[in-house]
Length: 87
Image 1 (cartoon, rainbow, N blue to C red):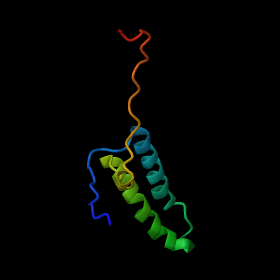
Image 2: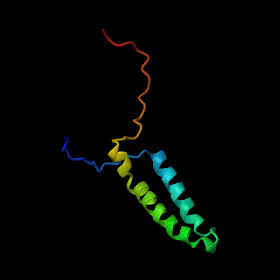
Image 3: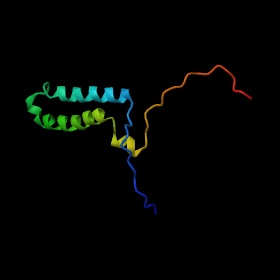
Image 4: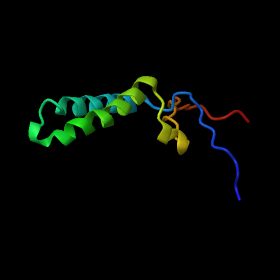
């Protein structure tokens, strides 16, 4: 039986494209509040509850789901070296 503890590193684990996508999705959900017909008032409560954690994770640059699966942002690409390795 594995009794090890999960360790969540609080360093940023999101790339910039992830942050931008979360800002856009959060803004769209918050903006949808003003478009929804008042008869569907249950959605008016759910949209901010979904949008706020998305925007907060984009602001701090850390996602708990990414940390759970140990996903890291895409590393920066190094330039291709045309010279052969020294023997």
